View 1 (tube, rainbow, N blue to C red):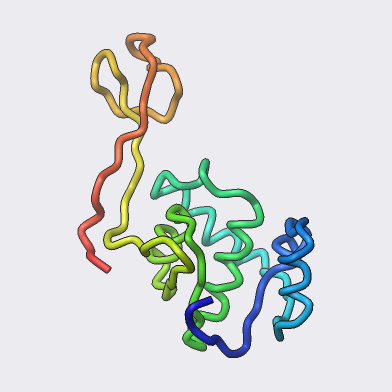
View 2 (tube, one colour):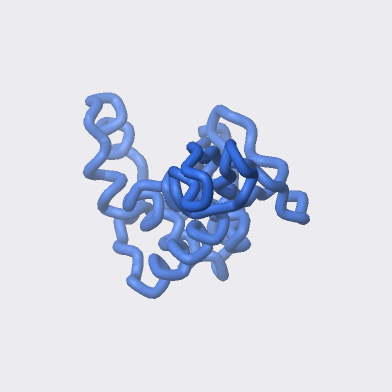
Length: 145
């Protein structure tokens, strides 16, 4: 990590995902609390992630991690991640974000599914109007970070 953070917190699911020996060793020597995210915060994150179109890019662990950061937002929590979908949803929720190796996002986006054939917006993989395949289109949300 390039910066020193105090009072580090994560969710149990992140710890469970760590398999390699070096990462487990690193976790054992840093001071980090492990706390569950509450259901109401998870619900808020899912709502914003659905509205932004990022919901399909986020795992349950990602959602719970963002939810925990949301709970700690008033304490100036910073969510440290290189995952752009996590950064996007966190930024939309007003959570401070910092990167590890990759640059942080500069804008927030909404993803919409568009039909390749007739150009309609839809929530389906196949257009219900013309039957064509759909694709995801990125739209800037009018706010720079």
